[in-house]
Length: 97
Picture 1 (cartoon, rainbow, N blue to C red):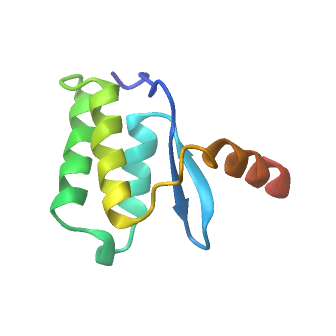
Picture 2: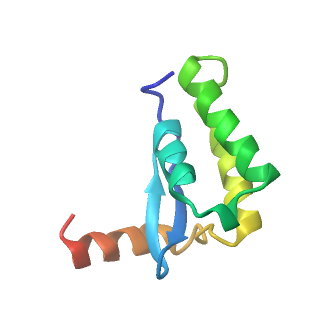
């Protein structure tokens, strides 16, 4: 399951509102681990557990995507699906990545 990707990325607005696309459970786990303690709580714990379960092969990537998306939406981090592709492109143009 380590190499499994989401069917479509989860796009979060982080830092000063920059978009960050999560393509895999590993991407999501890294992002969740980087969040400050003020962003932690039961939903954060559930998202981390889902990511780890996917990396162990006991949960599929789309299940993880749903849990991470729900967490991000609850925390106000989820980018709107209509602006997400444009936000990613703008970031790539701005940062040259």
